[in-house]
Image (cartoon, rainbow, N blue to C red; front, side):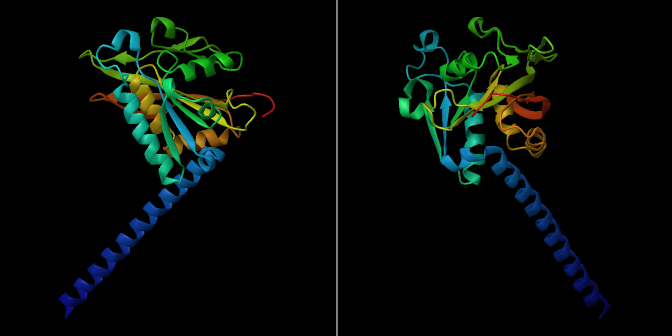
Length: 250
């Protein structure tokens, strides 16, 4: 009889433990999705056009005439599609070279830096008097992000085995300068290398980053995230800085 009682007690305890674990996991997921919906705001409601840029077609066109996209950008795209579709956001994916004027007026999610994505380049140039995080060497493909406020450069780093171990991801959200009067936004995710782009994409699904952005209480911001690289994959580690941006009337 005691054996039966012990079995019942163990089963009940296991059931309670499983229910508690499920409840905690559900609460964490609910909290993260709530933060995520707040972060994306109207962009999630209106739907997002993800714009990817191909690497230099003049130099690499003979390898693949349709255009080459780095693995980091590809993984960033997968991460973002999963995140946005989870909160019910419609996602349209297009190449920077294949955008019609009406596409440019929508909410844009730009993947890749100014060297690979011309819409990223045009947006950064439009707001060059607002931004403190810049990509000064993109024309010569010098991979580093500069904070002009502190005059500090953030550059990727290799380890002792000559493999990349560290990269940085840039995130910038601003009013869409190509909106033609519509109230749409643009979010740029770019890394020194593709690892940083992948890390930036993963950042917008992490609760600590979403909380940090929310604390700033400003819709528009620039941010830099530290990205560790393991086995040729970029992993978001932590925010290096998050800074609100003042862009006047919107």
